[in-house]
Image 1 (cartoon, helix red, strand yellow):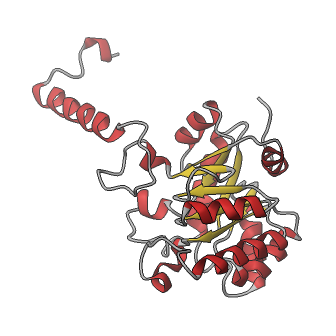
Image 2 (tube, helix red, strand yellow):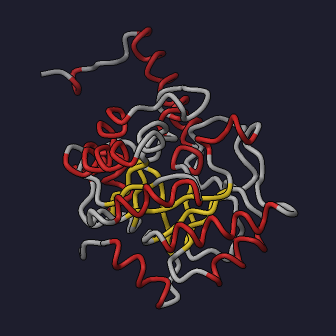
Length: 264
């Protein structure tokens, strides 16, 4: 199985090949996704919400991302591992941005990092890319900006559209190898995708991006019934796990597990 690199992801756009991306937070899931041929595993700060139960991604720390990245890196063979830089790890200073990107690579095993924001983030993207660390950008609905945006709302309607285009161009010019477009109208995502030379990875951004990303817990049906409109559920693992756990509880309570078959 050939190892996927940031260079390969950039080439996929040139060749007109779509780029599937999924989040991963642990060894076992990373191994399954890697075996399934997912070329990019994103260790998202979404772990804070779907794994740790936070209301937003804002409390997530660099140490937490490093922990999850280590687990994912040990589970994959071929996939490119991209780690989110959590809130506060790059906004305060360029030195912080460099230092924390290095930590994610050296301590976590990340092969690329992702930063949210457009023109305001471009200097940090440029500084990290200058250290030969591949950078994935992220514009549109940026969850770390939830308070400024007043919630998780679609961005880029009306006059905001031109600003998001300028943000995307600034991130490309700063040296990013790809960029996530989240929560923007499909036509705007299409326009940006056609305008940029680097791949666009959509989430709630329509079908015309160069790739797509979903939170793995959402697409596997682990997060309950309330999911965003853009999520397609490919399994209902929550119900499967619920039924299995319920059966286990009954077996233990009735004394039908373990049996001789399960005993030494």
